[in-house]
Image (tube, rainbow over the protein chains, first blue to last red):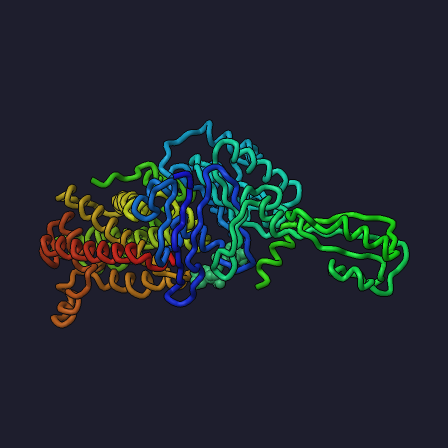
Length: 306
Length: 256
Ligand SMILES: Nc1ncnc2c1ncn2[C@@H]1O[C@H](COP(=O)(O)OP(=O)(O)OP(=O)(O)O)[C@@H](O)[C@H]1O
Ligand SMILES: [Mg+2]
């Protein structure tokens, strides 16, 4: 039982018509950061809200730390913290009151020093007496994070935590999430900034049209799916690729000064040595040579194209 | 035995009460002022032309009805607003994802709304004491009616708050149903003063039973017997409990 979250054959059909989740199977490992990626409307929020108890599953089973989310909802929900996608706050309440309410709602006895600690970590301490409507958007989002952390959850869902957050603050948040992971919290996040997933996640899952297409260790995914390219800057423009070079399926760019070779870095024989030898035989000379790797973003676009 | 998440009930209750106390001026002033106005208009202006009803001066006679009028309206509006507002702002997500059952949500919201109504009822009673001589023959029964009515109609308001998906719907039942029923429910007269036909019609109005029973606890005069009043209120309470249970079981308008 190493999975902290285990989803089996989950389906969600909204109001008996629209199927938003199709037979989802997903295991989340204890202590990892899992990035759930997918285009708008893919079903990310639906999936998260189902685990959290906001959306009723149509069928299937969800276990959190081995407990069923319906039968043992008191246990599972107290293990979970959620920062929802939409900013929803009590505009007329103070930061302190609203975070205190959250802790109580999740069944924990009041603990002022702990709340003080989170507010300080999230740089909200000097705003604790402010009503929420007087805060900036980024601050409001941090209040939502403080609320989610108020009851010391073991699993944290962040549904697009960095939407509308400036670059500095985003970096801060990444650090914060990293620090949380070190305390043993499992984090599941969704984001449309692929570099964010690339930076933070241990594993990535891609969902599209309600189906999980792939779940993979991030590094493996990038190795496996990521094509590597060898790029040669030519000394003289080439009118045509010599016939002898056809086995490498090279690409010539439009101003005919660059040759690109796509290769699989995982393969024993990547064909580079032979290509370079063949090039000098054919009299194609180059002034520079470099390699480039697909980013997670490019892999992602490739994956959801279908 | 079911264990309740008391921290959650307390947190919700406290949060709801805190909001009320913050705006205590508005929350209390308007019902108290309008009650005062009723005394001036009905008690003094009109009351001076009506002798007595069942041996009680008209001013004193209308007190129980006036209290019920405010308690009913405020219970419904406080409870319906209390649950509607989080739905409207989206903060309901937290309540839905918290480890609490619907019973606890109910205890928190309905408990707070009922508390407000009870406080308000007592304040109006105090205000009335300034204008007219009061006499409460059965104080415990009076309190019992006050609490029972506050709880029942807060529950009713809670149901309206879940059902409503716009501010108009939130207002429509209090304005179109409750206010007329209260005015026709014998706040300002006893239904015995009506022609035979209208007396019969009035017996279909649930508010008649509330006011009649409540008035009995003051003056020992009533339109219908106290036992019938209690049975009717309990029947309405049971209907509300039944409805709210169904709403919770199906996630009606709360969950997809
Ligand atoms: N309450 C609802 N009733 C009916 N359909 C819904 C409801 N909520 C979501 N949907 C539909 O379910 C699908 C998945 O929506 P969801 O919000 O889960 O997407 P998402 O992956 O979170 O998208 P985004 O990146 O835009 O946040 C969408 O087609 C959406 O229209
Ligand atoms: Mg979403």
